[in-house]
Image 1: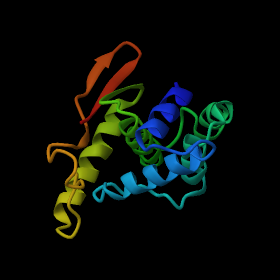
Image 2: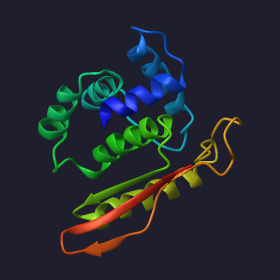
Image 3: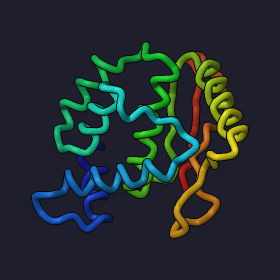
Length: 159
């Protein structure tokens, strides 16, 4: 899946042959800056490595990083960084909906609500602000909480 997303993004940004990773990196950096209401910690070493691996064609290294460095027990606040980066990456590839299946959905939903309320309280930060070339209705928001025997589901809509 990672290789296909990379291919789609490179095609969409019209990357030159041999420079696909650099073009994807520039597009992802540019796109992340448009999410002013999200506090993505791009300077955190693990987030930086995840960012680099997303933009590169080393899919197996990305898989190993997710399994061993991020893992299932990452803190909710830290996990948000990875989820948001992946959402932006998927959005660049033309993916509209991303579904997450996770345990402890209550913690994730509480953090999402707290982050949204903090962003709206700070008037200098405008949440979900996008460049004008996209529809003004674009936003990625944590959606509904549902319960199942194995945990919950978070669906994020990116349009």
